[in-house]
Image (tube, rainbow, N blue to C red; front, side):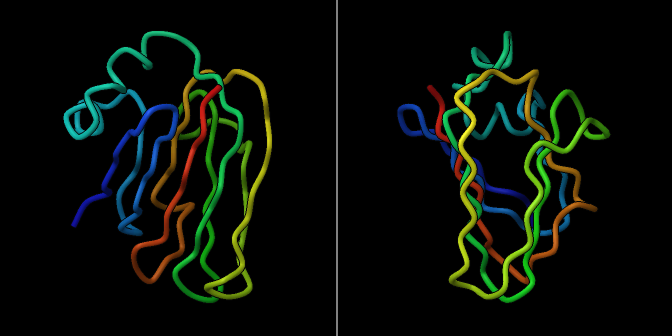
Length: 115
């Protein structure tokens, strides 16, 4: 299985498979969402990030700068309806999700709204 990435306007939506890294500048993600090719040449201006869990205790951490970078979004959800939102209105040196930072039974989603 693999993560599914799509871009619509200023919104990146990632459906996580729970076992695969997600890197905004990887060839795999750029092949899935070619718009990331242009975005990955600079810094990413983020308005907000939303995590939509698929089950109780789903969690995700998003890092800046690389797979081992600093966590800038780190959440765990009580149940499948416990969406987490964080507002930033600033730029980041890329966004990355290490597979070890994901706990999800299936199809949890991360939505990144860019400025």
